[in-house]
Length: 442
Ligand SMILES: Nc1nc2c(c(=O)[nH]1)N(C=O)[C@@H](CNc1ccc(C(=O)N[C@@H](CCC(=O)O)C(=O)O)cc1)CN2
Ligand SMILES: Nc1nc2c(ncn2[C@@H]2O[C@H](COP(=O)(O)OP(=O)(O)OP(=O)(O)O)[C@@H](O)[C@H]2O)c(=O)[nH]1
Ligand SMILES: [Mg+2]
Image (cartoon, rainbow, N blue to C red; front, side):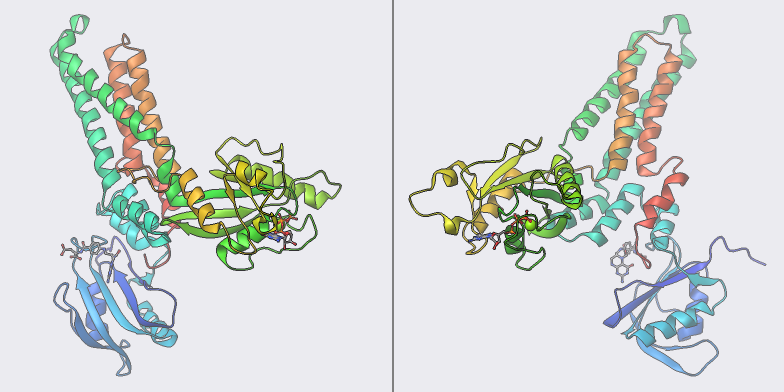
């Protein structure tokens, strides 16, 4: 009896039914057998073949569709893969999935399981896999650009280059230790290794000094609307997204919860957050709303401080950048434009005046138009790994006169920290978290 290392997994890989065409994918050791059973042959590799699908042991036609076969190990998962492109009806999909489920060694795939096999078979490293997850999740042009570069290996190449340089530096040092009496290891044998470690450290520090731009592009820039009750925060949010996302009334204290809406500014994902108007109040509910508003403003990428009168609230003293927005411009008569001129932008949610300026000002304050630098960190996981690796290299530089063996060990730790980012060393504990992000069929 042959023991299969893996089950053959199958899933619907295309979107929600009904759809024009649905892609059902399967991967594993029994793919050829499954094709023989369902369509009677195994099509030539990577060539679309039109076939009739029949349930195993039955003459019933399930559907007719295009079939593709990708032999391992060159395939996406690194093992045999097949795709059935059938009509995207619910019952069609259900019948094909059911037929696959009756085949020996077949079971339904879990979320991210195709991609997990790609990782386990060395077809992609963890940063590329995170890039793939981001590509599927991307909603804006800039998120797509960032994700596609990462999926194509931009970070992998950078991190693998650093890791190999550190490994070579350590090899140099160990070779030096083998051949030279430890008491008088000549500096010039070791010097190139220390220099290499120092230059990797410099490159890492520069890489980390990025104002978290990639992470912000990936997760979206957060812009919080802040101001006294009734200044028109909710009205402005509604005007910007052209729908009634938040309740607007003439009564101060209307909004209590944080209300989030998605904007696309210059291809970037921006989350606009409406908040409770800031004031002293006896209402427990409103007080909690105001506390949430302040907390969110404290971590925002940008605060829009709104005012509809001649003064700006004291309360607007957040850390990040602030734009002063004068609201209800339609109510200002032509000879009282003093505050409007103190403001960065003046708008009217009612007439729409100034909304384009406001969008431009938000884009400017967030520096959205800046060219996207290459090899951006996109996740805390990556940042933490690089920072840990750098910390070992800095310890190495600080403690220059420690024993060579100790220093070689620091080089090894630095390389291993990088290896955990790419998944080259000991990452079993990370995988469930990383692959849980994927949808079924990916
Ligand atoms: N129909 C279909 N489209 C898809 C995918 C898929 O799985 N199926 N992908 C899934 O994410 C993406 C493409 N990703 C892929 C990544 C690697 C290989 C691959 O290695 N393929 C070959 C060898 C390529 C070659 O000829 O150079 C092979 O299978 O033999 C294929 C697709 C997006 N489009
Ligand atoms: N004329 C005029 N009235 C506006 C404008 N924007 C808002 N208003 C009015 O101002 C009142 C309050 O508007 P909201 O958008 O609810 O104000 P808010 O800042 O969200 O208020 P709270 O949620 O209570 O903090 C409503 O009666 C709106 O119709 C505007 O641009 N022009
Ligand atoms: Mg409101």
